[in-house]
Image (tube, rainbow, N blue to C red):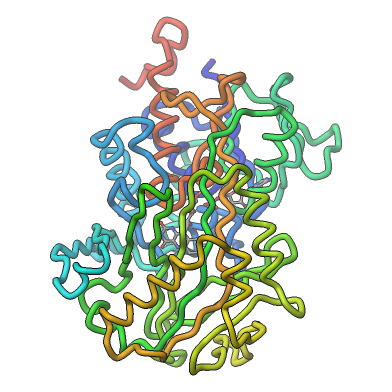
Length: 446
Ligand SMILES: Cc1cc2nc3c(=O)[nH]c(=O)nc-3n(C[C@H](O)[C@H](O)[C@H](O)COP(=O)(O)OP(=O)(O)OC[C@H]3O[C@@H](n4cnc5c(N)ncnc54)[C@H](O)[C@@H]3O)c2cc1C
């Protein structure tokens, strides 16, 4: 008998792993996927993070195709292997796509001269699957796995895992609801960030140091940036101060119908952005994060939490602009933010780093001359990176528990392609581990 694999999380990583396995003869009946969300037939649009394909199921459907974007896949397996794994993930999205010919790759090449003196512009290929098709892709993909015998357990939250006795506890730890495994894949994505931390604390898992990622959400009328948007819709400006351990980048650019969104994390407000597809929402604004990645802060999580807490006023985050007011959400309410007239306190709280952001804005004013003072910033934007457990680079398993593999955003993958690639990578390792004499039935198809 092939071993029994339990995958916690039916997201991009878990689903790609299962697909790689059954495609190569691993018996589907030996794979159980547990998810707190719903099947693609039941999942509602507002269930953004949970269910079949996880956060990828209702995402923007942009599959980045470069090892410099997202988590560091090449750190585990090298550049060539990483690209090969990315291809497999992209092919899966095409394979279950109702109109695969519509999956197109955009590959902007030339870095424009007007950017060069001040910023680097990261240009990289992106495969566009189309948000509108993700639901159909999900159904086709799910049907394939079910046909192959993969068992899905929906609307079931895994609340604890006993690594020593090899069992997972579901829904409030009732003894009845434990599931045994020989091998476990922990693929809970961002929605399981707290669970990952819980396990890391409980088993005192050694973790990789993570840098702080903090900054502001910048907003301005789109017209000022149009020249760059025409070259790269989702542009990424960056600059590095290597000797200071600081790098800055514009993050997650939204255009056309672009809205600033309030995120509530650990009870505090921070900011993000999103773009609506429907023309009715068009507001001709652009927003993006200006995020600093800061190395060398001893307790990055605690440091970020403390900074975010200090940047709250009257139960919300802050807004600063030389000329503008906070804008509206897509629902027509004002974006929740306390307007401040000076950046003095922000600079103090984020010292010595906030100057890098002000400098970034000053240089944008030079590159985009019409911008002048026609902008505003929502403070703060923050990415709490999940503690990344130290894993064996050959198979992403925990040092002390070789049959427990962390994949996807649970291992700081940051994105669909890298998450799927990590799942595929572990599945491939599992396939390589199967010894023909031990599991003759596994090879009967060959
Ligand atoms: C709105 C939005 C848009 C995005 N757009 C893009 C994009 O265009 N391109 C891109 O590359 N990335 C995008 N992302 C990020 C991308 O979706 C994720 O990086 C990717 O889905 C991570 O894959 P994953 O398998 O690690 O986790 P997920 O896909 O998030 O899946 C994790 C699954 O685990 C389940 N789960 C969590 N905890 C438990 C538990 N305790 N018990 C049972 N089940 C559990 C969840 O229900 C979920 O289904 C977007 C994310 C969001 C939220």
